[in-house]
Length: 266
Ligand code: NAD
Figure (cartoon, rainbow, N blue to C red):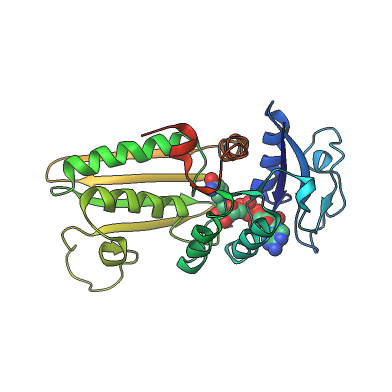
């Protein structure tokens, strides 16, 4: 059994992760952490999500190494650097689900992965990782002809934009077409900004209601258009993926991994 610590355990994703840990035959929840001002503090993690008691109380303390094998972080971008530093201090594996952190934190993650196994994915669903492969194929075939646009929709509470998944899609599209997002990405359009620049990759964001997560990539040509869409209807798809990935990560040596490694997609 892989012993799992969840940070952000009382959040939208954290609660699904508690359920996913419980339903996975290879994992057991051993630690649940959230902020000291969480109204759920000191409650049993199982009871928090409508399961029987799991004898794991929601705590505001980062766990000691003896308490867990792998830590799963789904919190806020401002917390990721601290999760990385504490995981290195504990010499324990880390699964990062949080999105929206900057290049400085990315560099810190790369450095940490020399000492501990780290898995990072902007989207832990199986479907999105297969979708990435479809995008690569389409972009390689149509990159010089099609105008490529990424459209993402999420619930009204999401704090970062474009979504981490949209940016990962952008990176796949840019790599496949010999482009670079810092130069070719277009993140906002307003006013008299002129015609669409050939070769750019556009991003559009929709926020509203309880949309779990939808991503569509347009390959727009003259007289025809391909749309590749992934829709997540239930947060459990991310949670199940992250928990399976944590179990996989527990037996890996130090390094930086993504879902292609876990799913063995080449
Ligand atoms: P949320 O706001 O519902 O939950 C975040 C939780 O983290 C809250 O309970 C909050 O109290 C807690 N938290 C914040 N700072 C903390 C700290 N310092 N210590 C302990 N706990 C802390 O948000 P959410 O919808 O669950 O999303 C969380 C993150 O996961 C976001 O960055 C989101 O974009 C990302 N996400 C990733 C995927 C994926 O597949 N990678 C899927 C969905 C969401």
